Length: 250
Image (cartoon, rainbow, N blue to C red; front, side, top):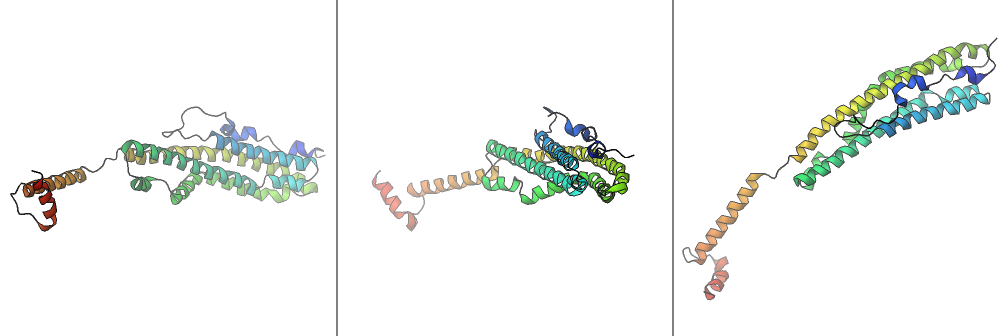
C-alpha cells in the first residue's frame, strides 16, 4: 500500500545534495581582487529552499501538480541565471572600482581610463563565460523535466513516478553545486585576467616625449624672443609693440 503522506515521500532533503553551496561565508581565498560572492551563493540556496517550502505547502494541501511545478526546470534555471548575472555584475563593479583607484594613483586622464573600464558588452561576455560551467546543471534540469508528467499524475502512475522524480531532483541539486564551484573557479580566473588590466592602468605614465617636446618649444620661443628684444635679430611686425614697450623701459 502506498504511503498516505504526500510530504513524506515527495520531497527528499535537498541540503545534503547541495553540498558546499550551504557552507558558511568564507573570509579568505576570495581571489586576487578580493571578490565577495558569499551573499550571492546564499541567495541562490535560499531561493532553492523557498521553492522547496512552496512545494511542501502545495503537497500538504493535496495539490500534487502544484508541488511538482514549484520545483520545475524553469524555477531552478531562473535562480541559477540570476546568480550568474549577479556575479558578473559584482565582478565588473569591483574591477571598475579598482581601475578608478589605479587611475588616481597614476594620474591617468579620464578619457584614457574609459578605455580600461568594463562596459556592458564586457559584462555580457563575462556572464557567458561564467555561465558555461552550468552545462551539466542544465542537462540535469532537462532530465528532471522528463519526470514531471509521471510524478505529477494522480493515482498509481503518480506513485510509480515519484522515485524517479526524487532521484532527478537530488541530481539537479548536486549538479547545481558543481555549477557553482565552476562559476567560482571562473570568477577567480576572471579576477586574475582583469588584474592585469588594473596593473597596466596603475603603471601608466605620461609620455616623456611630450614633456620634452613642450620644453624644447618653450626654450626655443624664449631664446628667439630674447634675441629679438636684445637687438640681435630683426623685430617681426607682430612683436613690434612688445619690443617698443620693452626698450622704453630700459
